[in-house]
Length: 371
Image 1 (spheres, rainbow, N blue to C red):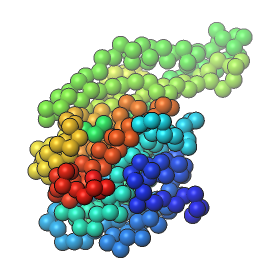
Image 2 (image 1 turned 90 degrees about the vertical axis):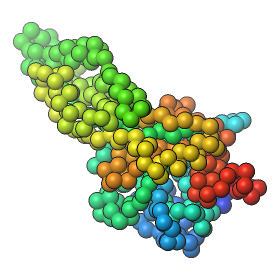
Image 3 (image 1 turned 90 degrees about the horizontal axis):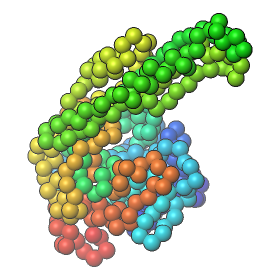
């Protein structure tokens, strides 16, 4: 591990966020950061530290009546021109500041600092969240070591603007394949242009009206969009194939089979191949642990409960029978954007709120410098 990769869990939570962001960790390249996280956590004897691939788990064994999971992913989408991070006034700019190194920093800081929380805590820092679901580190741990994730409640540090986002939409990717006949572009009339045939697929998408579905009092907005289009082999050849990749974000009231049927119905008459899917998660805010958490943290942040439109790993916890919510610093609308940034005060506020919940104290009761 390079000296530059060292992270200091005793640093303030904003400095820690910068340290995490400045270790490159695009999906598939998380090893350096996972090594640094593991080394930092192993310095704290109150934690049992485990590792699977580039997922690091640390947990307490205090015999508490309730065990909770606090989790966050280590990877980011590819970096544009926004590393290293920069602090300008009260804003921290850079890749990962929103999605989701701020949330990871909050969790890591508290994992090191809290030797006697009121709940036993399993802290999970995992890889490959931003890519295909079958690569996801949390899913791998659930398959290989399900006992590592046993809990009564889980908090995922995804950006939620300091509010609480319940459940999540499901996601599905499909390829709509069009076929033509190749020909020399100077004699196009003897061929059939597969790229031109994609026009009808795009018109159906343009005319599509996504639904808003209410689930347990929260309104989930769906969406169905073309996200990639490919076709052609050369500038003087009429293309004989074209593929339009679509992404469907569906309300947690639907299961994957219903989502697949919906997409196939929209593209009746076309060859549709489903390439990736993950179910959503219902809000689950009626669970007692979720209600306790909401009451504790929202009293600090002043936030509110809202739906999570993007897919997150709360769905994996839901599949394991563990109620889970999204709670972390950052505006979800800035995730993956080149102008990704987070208010410093929001990182500090989420840290303060999560600490108050895990220590069973009111924020004003925390010693100076620990809130």
